[in-house]
Length: 188
Image (cartoon, rainbow, N blue to C red; front, side):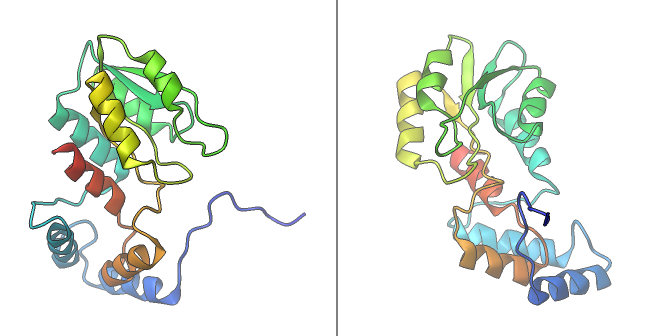
């Protein structure tokens, strides 16, 4: 039986060369390439300040702190997501409320999310799991239930493969561009 990969990354020679170039500078997390990435990403968002973080986990943790999520708050998250999604909510002192996903898209089931809203619900943290979530649906949910939305888009292809490949090749890293975009959309 051949190996069946679950989520094979797209890595080509240009990306490998960019990573090697970055390693040769001895700057891995910060430095000139990270600063250039932040500058280009800021330009994408009309000059708004941007900070690249070392992981999607760190980005979610910072976002929850900036939004003010803490003890006594509930955060609705999909049952099918990376385990860190629930962990960062619990670390913030809030309660993770798991709801099931749509069996076709594998994204959060909005009917179940709506049923889970309580007076303590402060945030919906959906994962763009198999396909991007519809921004209009997210906005309608937020307005109807008076909650904030923080999108976990680390698994999303929202920006398109061509754009993602260009950013990854230029900066020699797997850019959590969608995560940063969602921090921008949340007002952080």
